[in-house]
Length: 614
Image 1 (cartoon, rainbow, N blue to C red):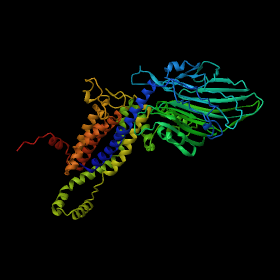
Image 2 (image 1 turned 45 degrees about the vertical axis):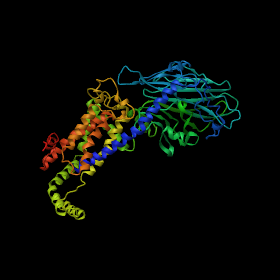
Image 3 (image 1 turned 90 degrees about the vertical axis):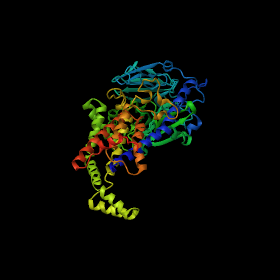
């Protein structure tokens, strides 16, 4: 076993075992708990309900929150009725339909909310006839999730104006919102204030909202613009240790914020606040997001908050901007945007080009951003040439090999040199016996004379670990990889190999991964098995370690890797298998050029040769 192979296997093995351990002991149990809570939420809801909270009429505790405005508050009653079907909840309000190339849905005239958004281009499964993804749903549905804008009264105003609430009925100038066909909602409070909400939508996932107020009264009015996106119930987590899901935003000097729901719940009053000018904030999931983008030149207070308990937990991201004072006969407006859709890299980059700072960070690129983004671009470019993301992964593996070729050549040549001096090292062992100090001194002198670096394989191994992780991140975070097919039975490179040896590759009708306790370790399809064999062959290229403990450890390494990678994205397993094959070929070429014996065939022969009993 040469130093290069040892370092690669040890470093990668520890990395994958860490990820697998996180998934097994934290992510998978948490995902199961969330699924149980979601089921319980749909089956057991108490029978009482309070009316929706009105932003202009908040509790005394909320009035004390900065700035000097009543904060937009989530409607989390102590008790909720059994949820209606989504269709029944939608039918409770008159609606204006939304129809664009990317989304379908509607806007509720009651409250003027954007609370019905489905994504036309994405289905729940790889089956193109399966239902499309539903992102936003109205209050009263099984999983409410919606966005809205509006105005709040000052908490110091002894006679606050009558502002639109979630119960207010708006009128619309026409019955459909489409690209190039904006919609204007109107509401007259009957006391001299006329509110208008102009909503436009592009061909992707961004709504542009302009809220304006006309003061036809006799006295000035001071109001605070607000935005909020709310959801009731926890996210259905994808269960990946290396993926952030929850609150997200970029807010002034605080910069990028990625907060889990649990972290916000532990904050004082279950609220985390920031002061900023512009920025953005909202919720992010693995592939989808709902994000508020306030006017970028106005100061604001942004909050992430949680409330409720158990199955009625609610979460909210909101902003309250600096006040607008509107004199009699005057008007004022504020512009904002609401993103509700798929986290497509090119789409987010385009929005960032429109002045939304760091909007591409809505995708969790991770600590290795400087590697993960270029890795995605390379794979995506190769996909557009080759027409298949699986082929793109194979091609990028070749490119990585080429990039590391000088280091790998140097490493393998160092291994070849080490093999040449093995007889001399053995002679030193025989000469100095148990005198380890003298043995070490003479061995280092031998390395110096022969110009051999025993740690020559470390650097290539260490450099490949970030590359491995960057590819891992690309496969699990980018929606471009979602439902991307390879060939044969691999219909989704971002999902594990769907075959399984423990049900005879589908012949036995049960799913072994659902077995309690250790089912998560029974993802063992065809590609993980092929990967395990390729790793075993790669290890057989070199002599077995003389140390018995090391020999046993490395003997089990292919088995451990096979089971550890079984539940990983099949694209990653394909990459690792192809990388092993290329490594074998590369080492064979280098060893042959260096005049060192290529020991793979002899080692394989020894493995399958049984010693005769004496």
